[in-house]
Image (tube, one colour):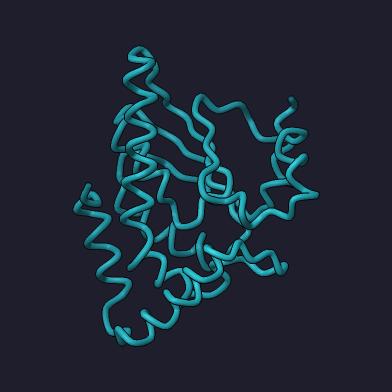
Length: 177
């Protein structure tokens, strides 16, 4: 599955001028962190270059996997047409783009992530997603969910390996369940 054209173009613009060797080195470090499920208190996307490596190497496959999941949900619930979304651990907005592709009715999205570089990139990318009004929130997925307004669609994808096992209970506690 291809990334939506406006997203692909925005990513290409973000990556313009960065040597391929730098992206490749950062992508190797990022992939090693993901594969090893490193939990050292640092975010996987803790710097601009790590985010750009994600955009170049991991986002297309992540988008495709999330899109397939959301497509399956849409097929199973044909009357479900969410207008509001909360994405917990949103990174640079991969799930946002997939959700907007599956549900063009989506109007607003709240995107919560602890990584300022990921949120900064996501904000820039979401400027190209005209139909959805986004709110980018700094926050920890296990601590900062209380007080969130109800949303019709709530997602949390590819973030659990960054959460310390002792903190996982905070996700269910914060959601009120």
